[in-house]
Image (cartoon, rainbow, N blue to C red; front, side):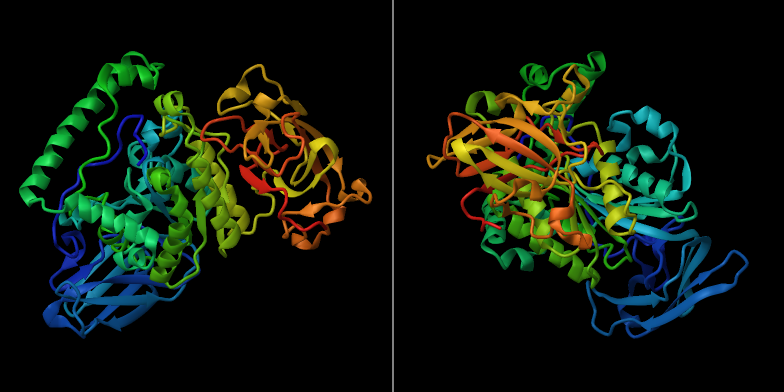
Length: 598
């Protein structure tokens, strides 16, 4: 598990076994809590409206309709509640026909003599924002929060925070609501999701509403967002379940309650001290805080009602909003799975598949590749464990190998020794551009950082790399935050600051000097053999040898016969390669012996 190195995140959590909160209830009728006045419904696809009836009303007809402000019915459908009970209730689902963007409307749901009515309902684009701490970090706690909150008023940008619980909470669901973006409301919205939604609002037609469903819990592993059945289907998933079972084995409810209460008190005291210290000295370093107050007391105890247990939030949060019609998913998570990074790719693919199966749709899935971070104490004592590079590789591979999955690179972001970096505008806006380009078809949205196309190993151990999307290829800065210093963009980098490393047969990596050559074609290599790495290089119908590319030559005297190469393969380290759209090259590693020559 990752060690928290900043003010702890999360909210108070309460428990109840009630299947639906009472805010959307009337007589025998219960509508899922995600439905509320001021909500945004998904445009241009059937709209799912769902809930449950009392057990003795199984088979009763339920009607849903959308009405205009003057009472005109725009859409109306009905369905019958199920005869088979679930949690003692009869579930129902009505599918309204697809509607274009618009509103405000009224959504009315009726069963027999009972009805629930919601007003100020908009139809537009709806995205689910999921994950852990860095998706959870709220706008009010992010960089430039005051400026953003002053300028965030937008009646067509709205959000809903799914109550953060490990078990279903009737009280929390009753208190939940859809809210429109304003300086009073948006402080508690995910900062990443806010900047994503803001980007869509700025670039899509001005009359298209955007809704965000925030569904995250800080400190959760990927196993928390999958079902027991999914986890049991793989050895990696069973590992999470077995560790959880061992953690709770033999304990009574009284012990769980005592452990949780003691931890919460310690956690609250630590947070209060750290917040006071930061207010007194905003520039205080995390290691100074740790020396004064000790490390953050994390993780919390694992209990049968904990949101940090496998499948907990999956049942208590995600299933509560299935199958609310969506445009797609945003995902920022992975930090908590550092210790088991070798299995993250398998579980990520399984989770994406399970979520899509729940919605019965191949929805777009946008991933934030983890930024830079390292625990300063661990780095000083033990060096870099190189787990975050493996997590980043897993996230990037999912985007390259799973249909309709995309990832944004944030290797130029992050803060050393703070796992909760304050800059959430950069990942949020890059996610927005990713959606605009890949989902909404806006080709001019900047999404392509320099991407490795191929390589050639030459004499004296020189390696020449060819990159696509390399207009204006250059080195800038070294690590996150250093781009603003006196380190001007350049075409040559010395070994300790290039981010490139080469290794020979012994497997020992050595930093390499890197020199950029711009505006080349593969034809410029004459009869040289080029090993192609990116086999999709002819996308958009443009042949490889007609594309303008950038090349980088690498060399280090310590490795005369290189067999392996890697770039930015550090939890925290040099990652200076950019193109003229200020987008970074993603980290990668490459076996120089396994690719066929082209």
